[in-house]
Image (cartoon, rainbow, N blue to C red; front, side, top):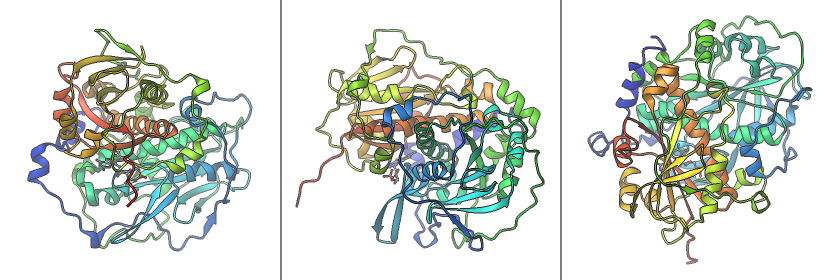
Length: 514
Ligand SMILES: Cc1cc2nc3c(=O)[nH]c(=O)nc-3n(C[C@H](O)[C@H](O)[C@H](O)COP(=O)(O)O)c2cc1C
């Protein structure tokens, strides 16, 4: 199927919407005995343990998330310690908790259902401390496993039609999504989660890369089949989602693409049996790019610019001046991050705290689909419950102007409870930030692959919000929602847009000592 036949993205989007009735008419019960393994395990491949206790960057978190490293003229080549830091603080295990059926290993980035369906691979040239190869990263033992020996960067240069970041990178990380690991709980909605969960992980990865002085960017333009073949993925189960070139070398001759025969390596089955959701295979197929020509055409499209100009009066945001910003490092904040499970409804946050989060999270992602303008596909709508110096109500965030435009005044905790899938979290938070996009324009411009882009961007901005909130000792959680009800709530302003994602921010409820 063709990337330009955008009814495929609409079919998936409309078919995976949540509504009050869809939840009641199609209840889904979890088969705990068939719970998927949270790790991809190659039992017969020797581990290459990454160095433990790698020195931390010490860079303050808000600088790390909002400042992109300019491309250096000289070489900027990661060593194995840099890679260990990047992989660990993106996908490593940061906490462990017992639950009735066993242990949950929580990771550096938030992920729907703590199911961790995003896998990381590395394609590198010879680096300090690491030989050239294609590797898989396993967070369970913080080790790489060599899948192919030798320098395969040329295969990625070819698959991305000579994308400049990939062509000059010393190493490229590839993020993949494993359907069943998330679909066990979320069924066909998992394809949206691929974007969200990959996005939160990318927020960490870009921040740590920036703090390490290494340029990095998100690359979504690549020939899918070529990258999948390089990793030897079983494409009915696992697919490549994006590439992140890391560092920059001034090597003058690029390695030529090499043969990448099937590897046939065993992996441990995730569950006793898996359920396949054809809707996800269809949207993935329809959003795949099939040739270098198609990648070139796709990349040549000018990015979608914001559609909603600000109209009425607006509140100017007041981010914390640099001197007053928290000094906690990116590593400290990632280690203490964890989604808030109960917000304190009696608490409030300041306008400066909210402004700082919005400002840092929306300064523009380094991504091939947003170049060269630094545009943003998602637009932000807020329900403010308790932010000092801001009247409760609904607002639109003017990214260009750094303002909040009031849409309607009122106390909307009950509405937020409903919109966020009848959960307490969005009702008790201080503010709920909804991500909406003009999907028509995005899909017209980018084809079905725009659907991948808009979900991924939402996750990455949401991931930055997590970090900016935790930097200020606030609490955050990603949330799911009733799609059409969200659009209706913010209409007429949001008319013709689609709901993409939701983040709630507030203060965690401190439990009283028993
Ligand atoms: C995209 C996204 C959506 C989420 N949706 C919900 C939700 O609807 N309800 C909820 O209680 N938690 C939600 N969460 C929080 C996850 O359950 C949480 O990230 C996961 O359990 C891992 O825990 P941690 O974030 O504390 O590391 C969401 C997280 C993400 C990243």
